[in-house]
Image: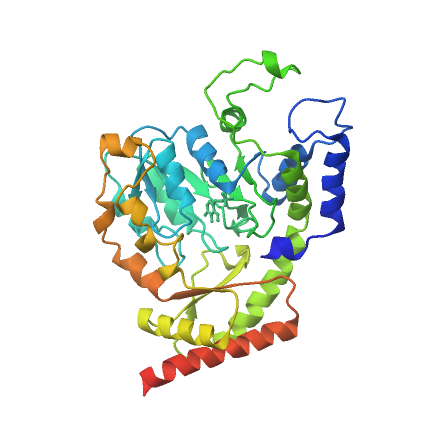
Length: 402
Ligand SMILES: Cc1ncc(COP(=O)(O)O)c(C=O)c1O
């Protein structure tokens, strides 16, 4: 959790600014706020890191994804190609804008592959939601080529990949709009918060309006503002934004530490027979929040996880059985267990979600183990961890080799 590892005086000072004026709301109250505009500061910091022309902060990564989809024109009945490996929010967002998720295969990048997308296209496909998983990035040249060929709108869910880039361009900027999460577990945190980025002014304006009940944000009398479109309340509060701004300023420092630790771990573990790593479409653009290690197959990966648990190694993620990140555990999606009726139930799902065949994704996630990287580790701690992981791998694979 690198963001929260570096929580200190600067965050306290920025929050205190807000508490002193009492203006917890991001809009209006110009005189009372004594020049403090924390949501705007947060957005400016995100623009600086990503190079985006526009950034708009909202209440969470989940609402950033919904806003990105809606502002990109994705809605009722549109088929949207999504990965089976993502945080569940991606799929929820597609469903809650009234669109229909179509699951496609990922590959060793841990993201949707161009080949997987191509196979899932139907005449009703409107968009692709690429999700840049585990700190890395999709293979964007190939993904963009399929989208162009089939005239598909691309939306980037970069919820887990703030700081990552592909060939010098920040994730989040490959589609019409992109979304980042700044929840408690991310490289930079606002407590709860999300930011949408785009280079398209029209998309930005729609996002800004949609995420605040359709307010135009023109003039200085909120009660008299026109509502050009219907929206909802996805606003971020000033206290969260204040923390998000400081944390975002720290990201270059976190990236440098993460990358150093990941390199050291990779160097040590790559000597082990049977171990390989997730493919980074651009190794220089890795945010290095996770070390994503492959074992030869699912059985050996599960043996290694058992050894890691036995040895008490922390920060281990085995997504194959994780409740929120892999489709195998999404029983509520498979049975469409909803609180009230959704568009997908009215129109009919484009796939049988309970009986999907995604062998490549099953194979990739079955043999993947991800280790969360902490920016505050010392070099000695990294070497101790590398030694522990090596021992567990050797212990688990020895009987299989015999
Ligand atoms: C890929 C992805 N999208 C969206 C989200 C949702 O973000 P939040 O928890 O801020 O709502 C997450 C959160 O982990 C995520 O990983």
